[in-house]
Image (cartoon, rainbow, N blue to C red; front, side, top):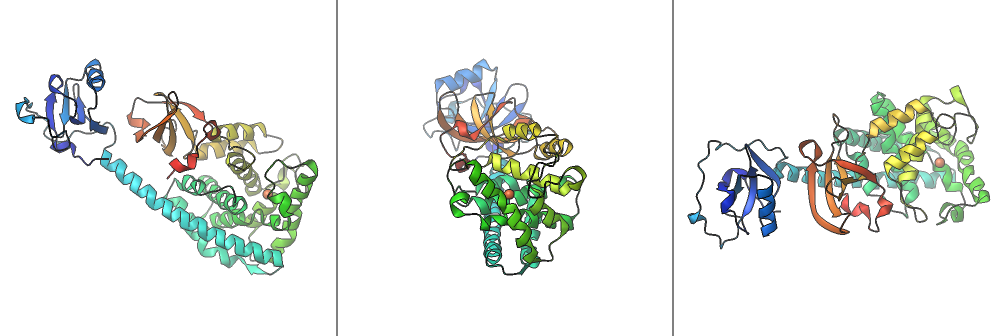
Length: 406
Ligand SMILES: [Fe+2]
């Protein structure tokens, strides 16, 4: 993207605009700085400005085609020599936002790497029947908590780093991040958030004892294989005895994420009041993450489709009230989910808008109608006429959506 400063632009009558001029703002009654400033590339572009009743445009001479003779233009004296308040976010601040996201991605990557390291160490020790202490997670859990606090896009960044082959580790990190986010939303204390983070990391620890062929089967499990897979919770009962200092929350997250409110879950078939809130939360988060993950044998679902499934599992399996709170916590259009905009573009939800959940900042990159990639544009829907038409499942496309999340 070119660097330009709206203040250094000159005001030109629309009748004098020509192809090659670099337009930074438009004016009808008041000046509007453009987020998507750029060179006029065709007669059609000029026509659309005329059609939209634009009277003047702001042109940056330095960035315009050098063949254009600016000396012949009638420059309009302007009462607002001060830069206008942009209705769209300025290119500069969006650029900074992108930079911050890159920083966030690096932080997320090191957190995920660290978590994977800890998880595999713990898994190995568990496999060998060695004891280990919860202190081994301590520094990492602190980092995860401060990361999810300072970067509300933590989930997007973590989910962008998952790959199909390291599913178990990445699912654990993702469940941790989601649990911490959800628990913070519900008002749990900092100390409890830590216990959720640890619970998330170890929640599937029992899978170390599951037959590799079943664990890594690149297809849906048969009924018999599924029964074997379910054993991971029975193994977990034993394995977590080796973890010193494990809190009740961490333990319950690990042991209750496959229990159901009606008592038809496993390993213990706990029902109703036997399942504390943190146990109920762990099943919601675990199912949501599994549904929205891309696996070798199944395409990922959009968060909205997953929300529907979660709601369909209430009240027999999941706690209705908690499912609603979980949906509110992630937002109608969670970060990293895909949407179709009113201009026919596909976009990734980039940053949530706490006040108007339907007007997040999005990153558009693809024309659904013409089936081709477009220039990447960040749009703040709170400051744009564009709206979200529908949520899209990533499986509608044959490219990897994660390539666009960074
Ligand atoms: Fe599990």
